[in-house]
Length: 246
Image (cartoon, rainbow, N blue to C red; front, top):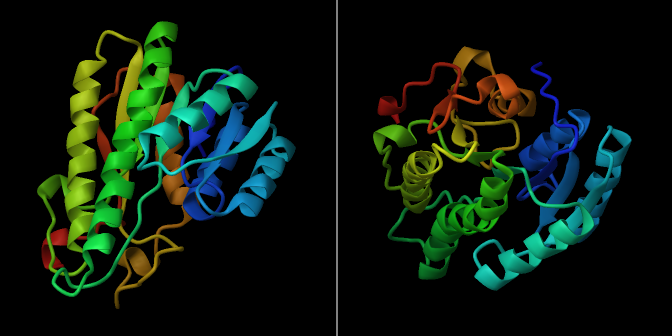
């Protein structure tokens, strides 16, 4: 496992009370970062994850609630993190709802929720984090995409998720271009199906689904100081899956 040194850094991982986000937050703690565990509705789980982050080596950790689709809520969450831990140096945009329904059968509210949690949330959190990163001349943003989205993967089922994740990768490249002189890198990791996914296809690449550790490895690669020249990139964690066969 890659072991970046995040001593003296503050990491905020959205959607980190449980699942993949929790695993990434704990990896940042093990690397020495102070950790902000974000939640929307899972406060108790977030508090427990923050406690474990401290046990795993984080010098400090806190749980912070926010609706990532609401600008005022995002601002308040960052204000709270800055007050308790300091400015955010590492931002992992992990939040993103999934709705495995045909697009015509999907409610407008579901369509909006999937688009907004995946794309608007990534935009709002990144926009709020960048000024402090630019001032410090150091920052790491890692966005969670989806395998095949760089080829505009599309399917009638779960369509707004595919649209949003394609937008996340476009946003990643645009912000990377916009921060080339700022000491900030902006990259993406794009899993196919992970161990906590809502649905599992009939066949798993390489005989298994991606583990949280598989995704953590890619995230930590981008956080490592040796990766400082890499920005605007996307690593697919798919075991060799061919999305054209969807």
